[in-house]
Image (cartoon, rainbow, N blue to C red; front, side, top):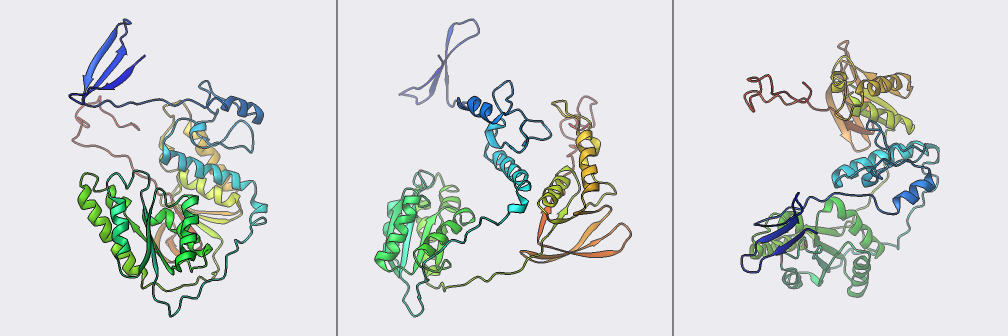
Length: 402
């Protein structure tokens, strides 16, 4: 068997493996990169048999290259690594596509099983002095391997208006959510600061947590000591710790000024706008229409199809023209889709759920479209490396499309 061992004196890596002649080979390296493959889990075959899903010769789900979410069983869709080996970003996109397809089959049931979450009455904090709780996250080792988290938590305890501060292994975990609620109740906290990762993904979670404790969800502030500190200063640990303290100090200062806010429901326009009429744009428009929404599809060129019009086969041997013809026919037949070709977007205004877009049509007229969402599917153009890599100088150097 192959092995990788660290040499005690040099700290180099000793790679041991069997050569093509069967003889043992040892080589010393500064770094060894292991590019390991992925195989389906052992339980996949049994599950596939139970769901009547075909598998490919490698044991992954059998799909069509141009319909990657479709299984052999109608109504069952696939996403992520069960489809094929893929990384996280591709898995997320793949899953979004599968969710869109799945939702098309349950359009009539949308919203019928929704129950509104119940919360305790909001605590009236008007007139109260700020009582801030600070929760500093280790994020496993994402933060703790660079930032001295205990030191940051201790620093937070000495800041103005801070009543309570602690460190957590994972502040977003269910256990820690319960600890936050408990701390709010035990210490009478009326503002909460979490020093952890990005608010883009975790702020709603923490806002919901403090709301469960009776606080208005806007009495919450985050300090991003992962993306803005440990990740970007991984080799400067003391300085990163000091910066984390600064970020926490600023978050606490801002939290002390926060006041309760309340959201009101607003109407929205149940129409979608898709800009770009290539394969992605047409699929997006069909996905919206299949869920019951009127959709406007705007394409700058005189024909739909985009780059797919110039591609006649893929590396795997599929025919994009067959897919293109099918999409064009579906767009033509779908009554909920209004397609504009030779049109351009001129003006855009509005806010979430209620937008207005003015387009100039092929005839030169302008038309205003009201819509609640917009999908940008404008695609891209092939890069032509003139003067690079002998492109244009040798007939043996071609772009992929060429």
